[in-house]
Length: 164
Image (cartoon, rainbow, N blue to C red; front, side, top):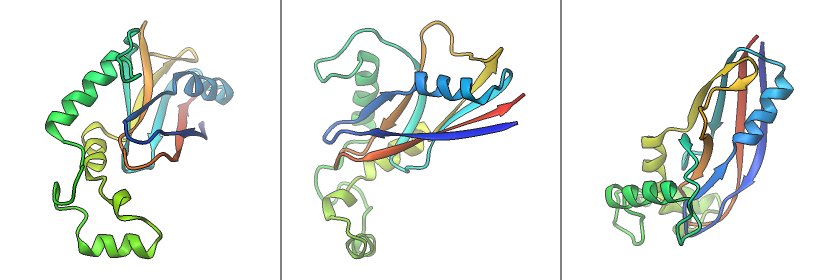
């Protein structure tokens, strides 16, 4: 059996946005009626990622959990946020023309760091389902991350459950 649903979340601008989607994924699993199989949380957005990680319990001064802030800091060292033109080869002149023709502003196109971070993290997580529950361990959570810091926007989180 295959069950699929999606839901919307709202990202922030000027900071990576982490959404704990564990409860929504669990509710989708309940609605599916599937007891054993896999659950996939997926992003079709190429500047977003999905991870499983433990809840840190502590918050940083930025409003992120400390483990989330540590991940952002590691990425800032390895894949710095694009703050000016020329940081990355992308977007080039053709990409900017294409974006302009489709109503995208130049600042919104300079989100190469978000695309690279998404490519490194990945856009989905697969979680084992045992006896109708996600096997995440005691503190495991599912986080949907919007790495794009150029603007706030609505995102779609997709959940698919496969099993019996």
